[in-house]
Length: 121
Image (cartoon, one colour):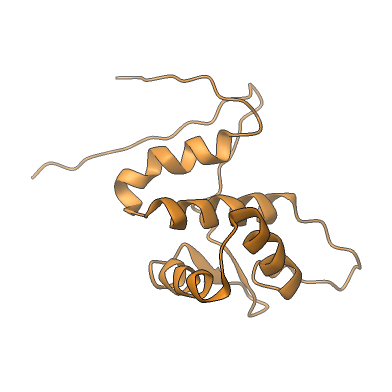
């Protein structure tokens, strides 16, 4: 069975997380933060050759807090939950990044496919 939905480039991350949320079981606020983090993570470009990606750097935290319009204490609780369910993981440089398995990958035809396999026993 195949379902298709057309989405714009500006909201494909939100739609992607919305589809996965049946498995992730995130609240709307947690989804907002995760979507903002994925956007920051996928658009990240190092300013210097030695710079290491850190989704939870001070600058990135400020950007996400502003985009999600939330306070630091709520943000910290959400970050802790995302870490506990392995949506945010430590990189080899001991900095937090979005789990590679969660990042949306668009193919050359501009399609993002999600495949679910249910093993019925």
